[in-house]
Length: 160
Image 1: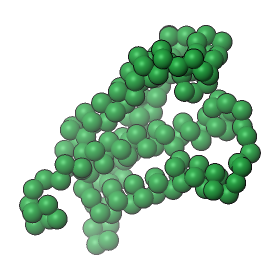
Image 2 (image 1 turned 180 degrees about the vertical axis):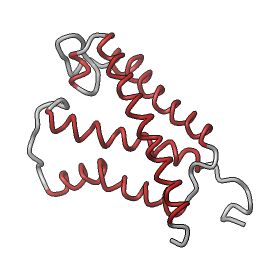
Image 3 (image 1 turned 90 degrees about the horizontal axis):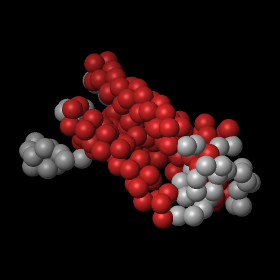
């Protein structure tokens, strides 16, 4: 019996999908920030601003992976969770391409305006598709790593 009275937890496949998406966000955010592709690097105005940035793009990942690896079984139905992962992934791209970039005038780059990440405004449609494909590959690797991590814990640390 679990906390849902024996019913399946609807959040498990979402949790598994979030693990893959989270790795994409971590890797892209910190890499692009280090390369200056997210815009001009500015000093933090306060400790709170710095903490918020690190919390959103780092510390929350510790909580997510702790929950997924030690307290949940997020990959009971990996096909369902991968489907959710793909809906999140493709939904975000469609949202940016169909709505955000078309309805926003800033920031502007060499090719277009409106994408929330400045470097995307420097890419034409083909360049963005290549970038999205690369991120999809990274996402699949991230999803696979998340699956492996959870299964590794299940096989080797059952007593924890």
